[in-house]
Length: 336
Image (cartoon, rainbow, N blue to C red; front, side):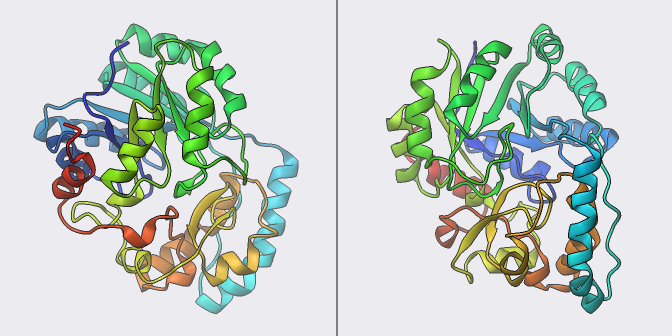
């Protein structure tokens, strides 16, 4: 198994923050970057892969959402939640979306990536099939999976994956493991547990809470082969982070793990929306994601932070701003 050329990984951030220039600049600085395939159409993803290769010869990865469960009970839970959100939407003058399931074009994206052959394809929200892993391996592509619990290492081993992304409790954004769990271990503790359970030769990437070179070095010292940073790049000049989100990162204090925005547990800055609905928001992704999409879009466009999922890790108050190249070099420090 080959390993990334850097011990710093740019975590994939779907929904806007990840851009081709961001990935290219992190790679230029010596990091290993990921494009985020989540929420993109297949043609859009193919275009971004081509655009990245046009400006950078460095290796890169692509992150894919695995389809989440669907059932009549999940659909009904999302409908009930939409009823509770109706007063908020009415106040904003926004019509909520309809709850529904989709697979985010999963199969078509895997087909594309078998042909496009990025260095790595990582999976989040679940596990790829053995057939998908085999097809990617046959194409010369490494396969990584995301987990939040040491008990999930055995599943990863059975799949024969090349890398495990151990996402600790401090991480911002969605919990990426196969089980929608609102609880978890601190990143260092998760790394300590996973490193003794992983199969020999399996790459271990730690993510969650790393905002400085000292943080990165500490996780490497705990046994990680590389450290993925996401929140640390949200205020990079090349990131597609919405202005309302950029501002909130350094003007709000608390974060919370909540299902309010998408129906899947994710860490975000605390807002009135999370305060009102975190206790009742169901585990119903992507059904709730479709319900809330118009309200979230309105919040970003109108600059209303209470209506925006302000994804952030626990270290967000230390988030730097400036060129992505400089941020990456600062995180790498003397590691390269």
